[in-house]
Length: 152
Image (cartoon, rainbow, N blue to C red):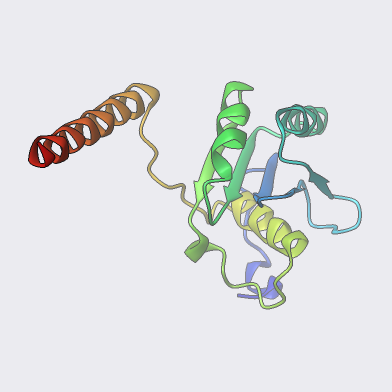
């Protein structure tokens, strides 16, 4: 898809941001101007707080983020606890950019999200996540004890 494909489409989320999550840097777009509307932030907790302040100062209410690894988790939960509506978007929905850079990716994600063209992944609630972690740990303990029983 190209820019001209979106001409005339209504803006669904006027206060949307797009984030391309990386292992060393998160790039955030709050508009379509790559020079003025894009900022890069680090991956530490203090950097997440700076990113949250940046978004709140600019009136952002909803965020779409794309990540290929597990780097999204700390940022996702920090943004959610700060009161933002956050979507984790699978890479298949955003892979139509020809020139692949992190800055262009975040601008593309912001544009698609502002037009309402992105759907978030299913993420279980906190209770279900805790229950799943306990269950997986239990399975691991049972498997470990079975291995030890076989050794004896």
